[in-house]
Amino acid sequence: MLTRRLVFLLFLFHASPLLAQIDREKLAHMPPEEKLPFMNSYLTQHWWEFYDSIRQPDRQAARLSEYRFMRSAAKDPQTLSLLRLFWCRNQQAVSFYAGRNAQGLLDSLTAIREYAHRHNLLPEEGICWLAWCKAIIEHQGNMDERHRRILVYDGAVRGMSLLAGLPLAVVNKYHGATYDIIHHIWWMSMYFARIEEYDLARRAAVLGNRWAHPGLDTHDGHPYGYNYYKWQFLNDLGSCYLHMNNLGRAAYWYRKAHTFGLSYGSTVHSSISYGNLGVVLIRQGKHAAAIPYLKQAIAAVRRGNDRQSEFNATLPLAEAYLALKQYDNAWPVLVRSIALYDSVQAFINQTDSLDLIPAYGGLGEVYQYRGDLKQALFYTRLASRLEEKRRLNDDARIFRRKQEKLEAEVYRAKLDQIETDRLAEVWLRNGALSGMVLVGLISLVYIAYQRRRRQQAEAQLALIASEARRRTEELDLLRRLTEAPAGLNPLPAVSRIQELTRQSILTDADWDRFRQSFERVYPDYILRLRATYPTLTPAEIRLICLSRLDLSTKETASMLGVSTDTVIKTRYRIRRKANLPEGADLNGSFGSI
Image 1 (cartoon, helix red, strand yellow):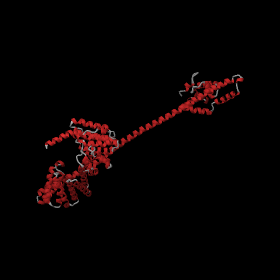
Image 2 (cartoon, helix red, strand yellow):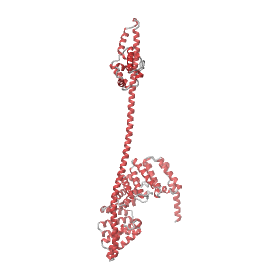
Image 3 (cartoon, one colour):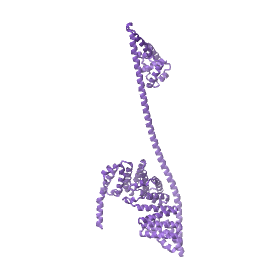
Image 4 (cartoon, helix red, strand yellow):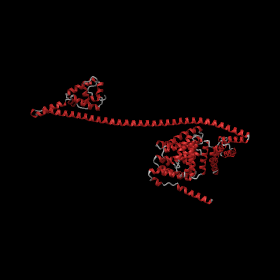
């Protein structure tokens, strides 16, 4: 036997590193949609190898290399969430349970949860809430129990709300060792039942019963399999309804748990549920009918050496015997229950357990029946004293529970408000940025449009100036022809002179067309000119505008259809009205207006 164990250990020692070798070539060329299930399966199969490598420095480097390669191959948020949560629950958990870095684990779970929330990964966010609650429950720091319950209440409600609406096809993808959705919801069900929050325990058990999947038996990372979880949730549903005084629903779920326990051959599990049916019968006042159920349950769990379950069934059996006045049958059961309590104090964790009130009261009745009034009085007073203590505890617990629920709701409302404010800030910031970008785009379009109009106006003004110069040159040519000898001056030329002279006169329509083009280049220039020099005449304003085109005196005279002397005199009057020195250039003097 020893030799075979050594061979087996040597096999594990040599085979374990080979098992953890991930096919890097295959993973590198794998389609993105296949990487997530592949990594999830790989991490589940080698969960304990990674976990144990923390205590084995010679293997830790290889495991770390495997993990880093998977991180480099993960491109989508869902796969990254899987790897981050794996590292948190597998590697950081060691320090957490050793009490060295509890806050680090909580912070990591919070960061992963927020990352999942930002990428709209509802299953990942919900599971992170439950994992965070589980860590809060197990945290052995100086956290006040009241504060602990409030945090767990809020986190569990948020997590279960996110997960409740998921289809089973989605939930079944999260049974691997990393997410372990079924284990987390089982923890919530146990915790809320322990603190007597039976409605929340029922909600968790309903989800667990729906999610339990036969594939759980194939995952090495699971401490329990499908049968255990499924039976546990069925039995827990019955217990929740029993404590909520819904006896019909309690009996329904206990029967389903009993039948399911028989289906996979567990005598202990099926008998526990069968005994719970007996408890329901006692609550219904059917004491005689309950006795066979409880006796069968006690016999089965005693064979399995399950003292806790035997203790839980013994007290109701004694209660049934006492209700039927069968004191001789009740006596050994009561003595056995007290003896069992002494052996399971570690589970109950109370030196004067209130669970023993029925046993003490029953002993008082038995001693009174036997005529031992002294012992009867002792146990009756002890039961009464403990009953009063339980009543006070119940009153305090009811008050505390209501107050904690109220505080938890306030806490949730504050968190929701903070989240709402954060989202509002994000929307406002994004809206402001979008508005600024939109205004910038509109401004760019408007500036481009104005620049194009200005360029068109400048081109039109240049065309007008060019036309003025051309007209001036033609008029000079035609005047020279007119002054030539009579034999060299044909009649068509004279008519041409008269036609050009008429065309060179700037009419009101010509001025309006010129002014529109001018104002595109120099917006509001004429208005500012009139406001600055109100005594200027329209002819003087026209001359100042033409001076901005750098036309000569002759070109300006041709443009206005007047003589050069008229232009010179008009410039003189303008300089006097503007207090300009003699010979000052009008373009430079009036260009800054």
